[in-house]
Length: 70
Image 1 (cartoon, rainbow, N blue to C red):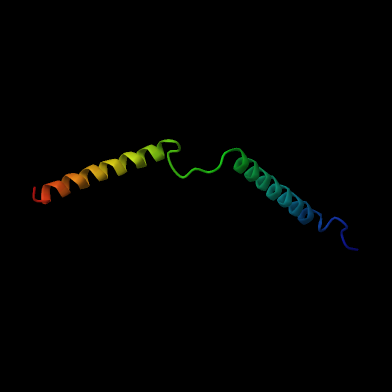
Image 2: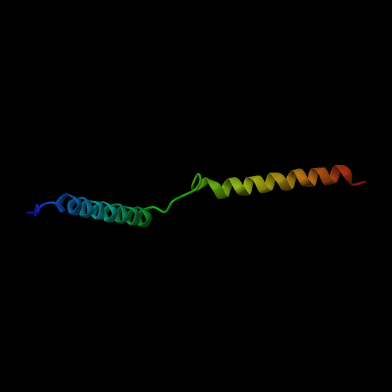
């Protein structure tokens, strides 16, 4: 006679895995809605970019004025 509880542990494992997957998916969704993922030092980035462009323009103009005959 076969054991009626033979496949029960695998069913429980499957159900627990489904619950874990659903929980992590919901957590990821909540985190994505709450705070979008940033790939850098947040609000300082555009300011740093502007400063770098200005410095590059100044250096370029200095180099051009040094090489152009006055």
